[in-house]
Length: 439
Image (cartoon, rainbow, N blue to C red):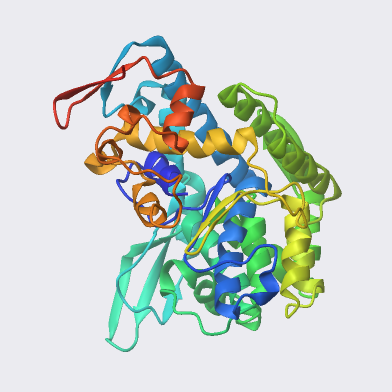
């Protein structure tokens, strides 16, 4: 999600990398033989996989993905219409609809991190009401008992806290020793210790609350509303809670009231529409994945929640297979390998689908064209530098660090340039003032 975060929040860097087509796992992975992974490595894989699921199965996530597609379409059209492109290329502020969405996304995202110890939090109902009214994350007061400190205006509980808390709680089911910072990873637990202490150690239920909250347009406010629903139904587990919210909890969109599952299906179809427009090809892999998600949404059930409640957690293969056969998986970059998406969990011969390959390449192009934080090297360079010693097909050239479009050898960047017929364009980098021309 790194490129997402850089674009959507206006900040220059982010540590959240996983999105709906590319997953980063800071460990070694063994797919499909996940049963041979250590608990720590498998927990890390599942943490990132949960982020992937959040993107493609929740109202907030799927809408964000579609916005990324719209932004990408804008950039692609601009480059197609111009022979000379000045870098860095910044177009989002010139489109009023995109500009408004980016501001909204930033407002509800909340705090990404907090550099102090947090032992407890305090929430004012007035702050929740203000966040609902102003469409912002919810301000929470933080207490550091060890240092006798109170931080009243430093932390905002929003989308980032909720999606990381959910992934943290599910990861915790597989490895008990986790060393995550309180904000954002443990923020939902801290809030529940204050609001609903009886469930503050029920990781399955906390993850379910977070998952439900991601179906609000303001997840931070949604979290508190979901907790109130649960308080009125204390015997529910996460599956029952999710089903109630998806099926019986209506939402108004463009003047029409409908169950949340129906709006989710609409957003999923929008996802396919804009992705197809961006890629310009008939979808294969993502059509299968999203068809599966649309069917799931229609049942008002969640395969993910069913798995954490009903699949034996010590059966790693069955757990991951259950999820992968429902949601698929994107291209995965791990410490030991790059794993390509398969049509099913047990496919013996991985196939890089055209839409996966193009999205992978486009991510590199867009990041380079935006020159985030002045960065001019291809985002893939660190990985390619390691791979060139073990893979003769992985060629690293001087152009990779400054002007990857000048590179002659085939790679994800240059192949995507060719796919989008950008190889005859002239790029001018305003950071180096050097004219870079494609011959």
